[in-house]
Image 1 (cartoon, rainbow, N blue to C red):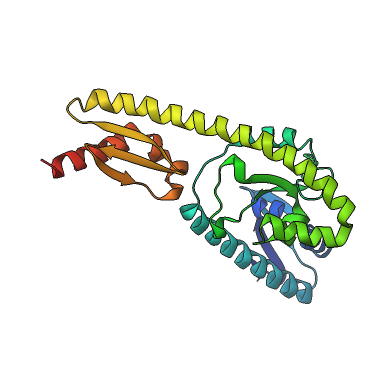
Image 2: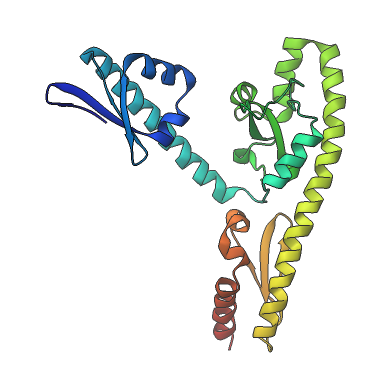
Length: 259
């Protein structure tokens, strides 16, 4: 937000937003403004030139609009994608990739972080959030890959780097895929263990009810007295998935409706 106060052009930006600005926009921002102070996680600044103020505000608004659109799109995709992974899985995948980009083989760095999490089969194409569908790749390659699948992006890179490079990278990826599959099995086993523990607690609460609570294919299924309830794909990543009260409420409703 930028406005004129006492003939001075004054603006504020959230510190969290400032930290997320693209490097080029951040550099332009710092070049054109004078930082005054930071209060309650807001950076207050003034802009000596009115034309600079107009251009900066225009670019910040465009950036925020794109950020909001991206967040909304990601929220929608979360509802349709099955599976779950956690920071521990990502660390194991980083080790499996030997700290190298899955698609190019170039080094990944944590400080500063130059990589992103990629869904090998894009979520929009039915890809899951299970570790088996997760790779770590350079930020610019992830942007270039976009909604392409693995085969498509590798064809682009093969044309760029050559057939010999492609064969070496493909063999490297095969070994990573084997290790990632083991990480995937481990995560599924952990989640199934949590669901089984919850199932036992619920069975103790509802003694006259037959309850099964488990991963079915890639999603979560609750069976109450032979009545199957298949939850939305993203449910596995919600707190309700592991809540005795929430799942217990569903069981009570199903039990009452069948009486």
